[in-house]
Length: 183
Image 1 (tube, helix red, strand yellow):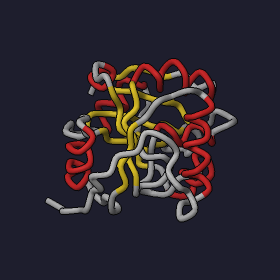
Image 2 (cartoon, helix red, strand yellow; image 1 turned 180 degrees about the vertical axis):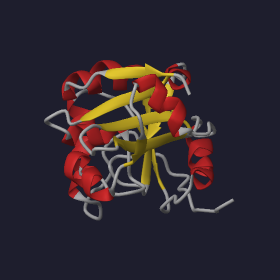
Image 3 (cartoon, rainbow, N blue to C red; image 1 turned 180 degrees about the horizontal axis):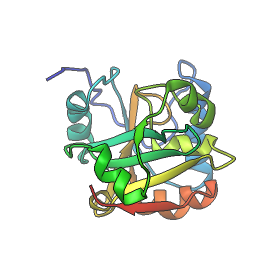
Image 4 (cartoon, rainbow, N blue to C red; image 1 turned 135 degrees about the vertical axis):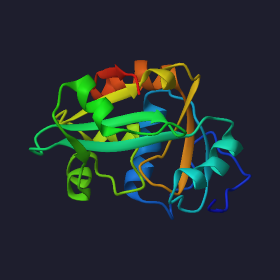
């Protein structure tokens, strides 16, 4: 298991962003504008889902895996949110979506559509997808969680946000709909 440092200092309002990226600051601004409460912690870069466990333990949430996927033709893109402890099998999801083959999308598409880099993928990146190029898929089991853990468009912080606020306030604002899948 990878060990990372996770701050014990939690924040519930926009932190000082003088040493943070613009995209992270814009995320906090949007959450505040939409009146979406959050609790966050700063931490080292978490390179694996195992490393994220310390973050989720600190915030009291289940690990959430965020995968950026595409079809073979590179014409349809998906953001999949699923429990971190579930194994992802592309063939299972491909059959549910009636797509012959899904693959992980290349970083340049992640940057183009979500303004995110590998490791920072989060449902909050949909705020940058103004043309709705990315379809959101959420595993049914994750919808049963009261809270979602998500990066504020950078993987050195994690936020605990009510699932209902993501679904009813955030997605309403971005104009994204979601499809429930079972993995």
